[in-house]
Length: 101
Image 1 (cartoon, rainbow, N blue to C red):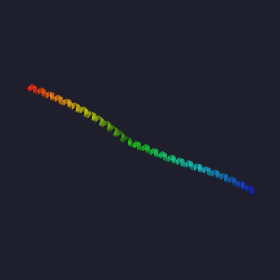
Image 2: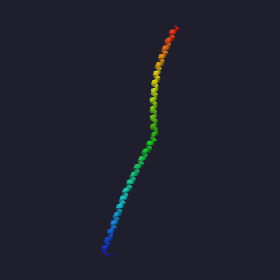
Image 3: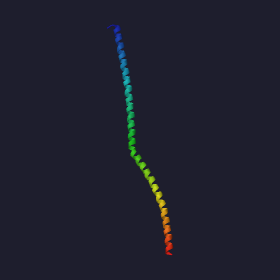
Image 4: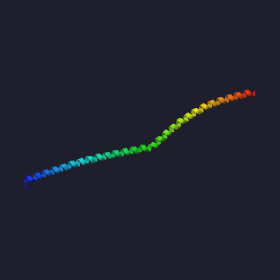
């Protein structure tokens, strides 16, 4: 082989190696992006699972809150009725006392 042919062949092979290196770098960047995206996806899945896991507890807390409000309203109604019942008892006692005299 002549020196010119050898030089030309080395240039072609050098260009091919450079092209392959660029492809490899591109593949590595793509792989890193996919791995990072996969990690983000896994984190999103874990967050969603955590939310689903705590949802029944949140629902239970909400239901308990509603129950407490209803019980407070019932207590207020019962207290109001107790006052009315005491007034009725006083009136009955007064009426009975008047009739027994």
